[in-house]
Length: 254
Image 1 (cartoon, rainbow, N blue to C red):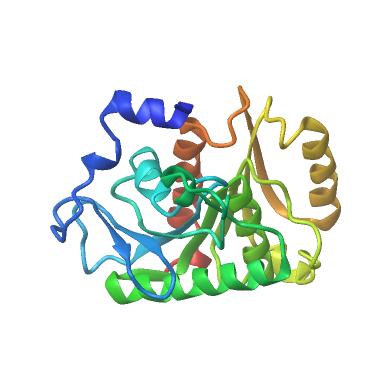
Image 2 (tube, rainbow, N blue to C red):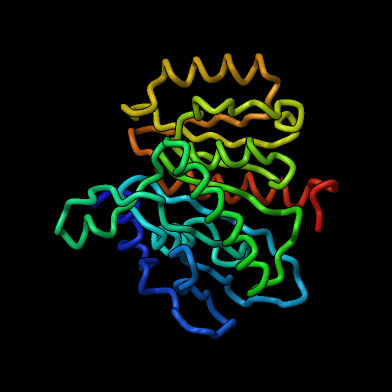
């Protein structure tokens, strides 16, 4: 059991604590049965007249779209509408294990980027059909491989997102991620890094900082103790960072 799952069990905020129904007096999480498997999350005490920020979550490697139900109690049950697509590739396509059959990731191949981008934009439209979403308050976020994919998609369309967050996901390489550099400089970026994370070393972080400085990007980099690519404190800090933008950025209001 990882640190995030352990804390969820201790706090009683596990997946079963969310009511999977249509009662807008409580948090609502349900599966989207369209072209792309996904989870759609509606906030506690949903107000139809309020334009909510939309959080698009790309799960980590070995997870699936249901990771959204686990993280939202640690992000916020009130502040967002949220959606999470399933990764474009099953982690082990030869496995007969039920656990591994439900484990997906976001590979770096060209076709996978196009498929992931398609999933993200389809789900944004689905969220807007179901809920009142603020058009200029759409945030893309993810953990490890999902964080890298979130950065890649947001940097390819920097004018469409209010911010992007990568928790333990390295900066993407290949396919010219900074091709739209002028627009990317206006895109707020949040990066979270576990000091002992073997897949995202201090050396890699230092190299990325040099790149960000040279490119003139708006990056908030935060380091956390331990080696987890997704820790509870990262999620609470993510909420504060996003809400600072939502409440303080006049240019990013609905």
